[in-house]
Length: 220
Image 1: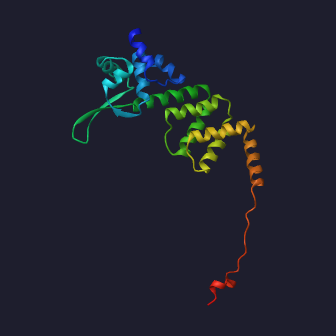
Image 2 (image 1 turned 90 degrees about the horizontal axis):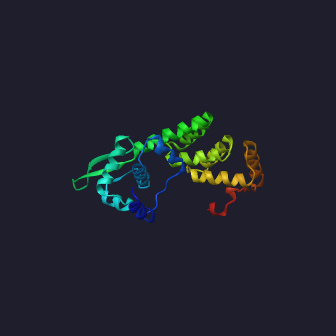
């Protein structure tokens, strides 16, 4: 990508490139054009219609350059192009990032296991409680908790509290951990003390004794 093409690219739409994904360029031996293309497509979703003109305008690339980059990503199994029949019976090309997401999840888990094998228990616990596979972004959120120094047992307690409240959302768990950290809750014992203190503060439930047989409305 030369300087003339780089200027409109920098002043156009923004592309979110998590720092954790930068090593993937080298690991997967991607050219810069292909890496930028992959990050751009990542922001569009998992599956979407192929529109070379729109992509070219956003990335300051020619249609030929767009298709070459897409072809390169297909060759290394990071992108898949499927042809499907639309509502009017017209064949349309769709791009799928399922292969990229699968390979990224494998890479993320590999990195986590290399650092500390025991930490994978948290990922398994969340997938078990949520009843689904975690997305790459969710893996990053959990990894950030672990990297920030949250003890595994405290994260487990936050996950349990979230599920108990009927919320299967990592942002909600993140908020729980943030609030606990502000209050100095950093161990499972701290969590138990907090729960016990909360129960003591709850007002007692008033039970009214009612004699149904003396209800005037029942007398006839």
